[in-house]
Length: 365
Image (cartoon, rainbow, N blue to C red; front, side, top):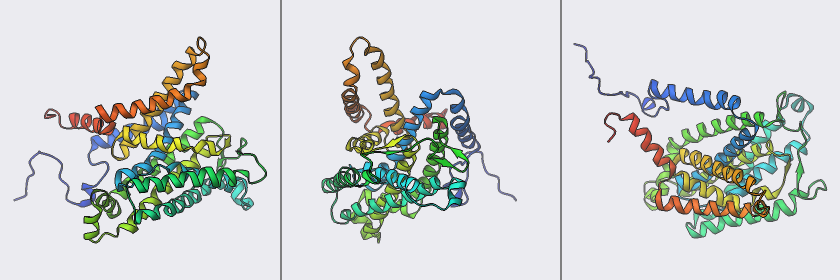
């Protein structure tokens, strides 16, 4: 007699099914719809200004993913992640402008794609260098170590030496036509948007799969209790350094992408405030990859709306535009305080509640 399953849910007979991203047809439909919106609808509906805002959101997400990996998944607090983004940006720029590529590479437009990969690796290795103290210190002392990475990398090495290569003052100019992928010259915000969304999709896929592997579970064990993790046989030094490498790798991708979005590269793009900004983004966004995404969207869009309000007011009060940087910092601090008080789990927790409400309906209690 054949066994008949009662209609009370979905059954997973293999581990791959249980860990699958798109486990039901409904989820597959939602994800396909999301991809269509991101790749097709947004480029057709949004004007050039909001495409530029979307590029800034993507850049912030790429930077926040590395911070989320360090703080959220391994418990390694950082306040210097902008240094690794800067290393990725300058590595990519130097490879594009200064490296003697074979003519075949230049004709095929492969210099920029190769520079992204090399920049990510260099940024990852540079991150490991400043992650070495994590083998002996943690908490407040690790914060100081990562702050040292920011000041040594950006304020000293990049500002005083690297940015002056070739007799320049402080910035590398990137004239139109410099950045291209194959025959496709990246010279408009829309083309930058497609580069951003492709890099973001690949990064999210790699990070999500890594977190579900043995490596990701080891990071979470170290975050929860490093002594217990070491007792269970986890090499905490190796996994901490690996976490720094992957976080720096993602930061390098963010920096290399930012090169395609700016006409000139300067150390001022990677100030210490950017490191604080990325930490604030994941505090507001909450846990997980979704937290980095929601926090980035919230912070970038809110700041753009504040600027849109400030521009009309500048006609009556001209000084407001000069003081907008301080208004931005004030709004950033107020947002963090408000979320820590009223929504300490961040936007991702609220999104989890909304999803459960619909997925468990009519038993959504």
